[in-house]
Image 1 (cartoon, rainbow, N blue to C red):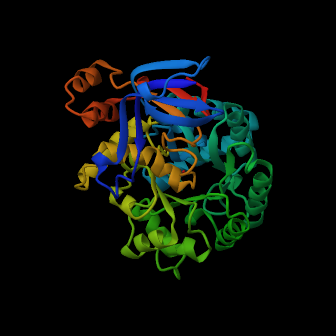
Image 2 (cartoon, rainbow, N blue to C red):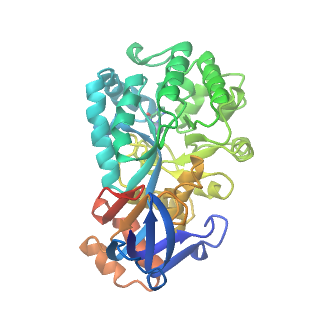
Length: 423
Ligand code: GUN
Ligand code: ZN
């Protein structure tokens, strides 16, 4: 199959190279898809259909890699947009009661379907997902994702203290249930199991130690947790772990830092923590709509020059399933920190940047020969206000930026997962 449109591929990391020069663009381009992979990306007049090959004409639409959501809680789909609370209060008032409902596997299956439909409608073809502490909540998501052919990491939340009793496991149970899920799902087609200690306040030292031992035994699994999201949370961690040098130090002590670690938020970092993230090769999930919605703070996206950083919706702390809206929020937070993120940098965070955080950087995230064919077609004139601004564009970036700032699911003109058209 050939898909024709404007093609966009990264040639370099736009946080390290001049952003405007970091991409390859064909105004009239074509992508060849064969056996679920990208066979070639080239100008359309250099990539002609073979006899019998199907041609999908996407016109002026922008073809790029599917979006990757580096941190999302599918179990919070039903409580998105819950009013009036900061992190700890929000967890207790809205999140934990909702997560308790996932004791019912039928409920988990229903929400998993809705979550995947919402993600796909927004051009998200891959994600790193938090489930709940119930192992069946992971199985429900895996069973919903598998027939779609999605590349997905998901984990059972490990939490053994400081939450309602019906959500708590124990150090041993959290370990054993996660291990059983790894045996069942890790490496099944494109599915991976993420080791998922929720965050330091809801895990005892014994549970963090068990999580570290599990990761050492299964180093190919991603490991996801939350780090330095709100000042009150950071103060609580300091009380709970008085011997640790700082928040990240707690995770480091238990072997929970390194390549494949996905630290959600990581807003209020000390210079030591920044250096340690870079030295250990840990990654960060930047969750801009969540960081403003829960009132957490202004993440410094400049860290992406030294640390793998991916963009994330963080639903339901995050207030949107749209990766375009999430890019817009990242832009606005950048502005408040004095850094106007270039459109190429925003697109990087939502694709190749997130792929690198998940150690999928050679598989997905870029429209390039050899990659798995997770492809997104963006309509760059999807609403009247976007169309009239894009019509004034003087270069490619001015053509794309209105869709980043103003676009939503109406901009998703087409979506292929491993070469199969899903929208
Ligand atoms: N910290 C611990 N759990 C959570 C969660 O579910 N959402 C967010 N935003 N932060 C957390
Ligand atoms: Zn989160």
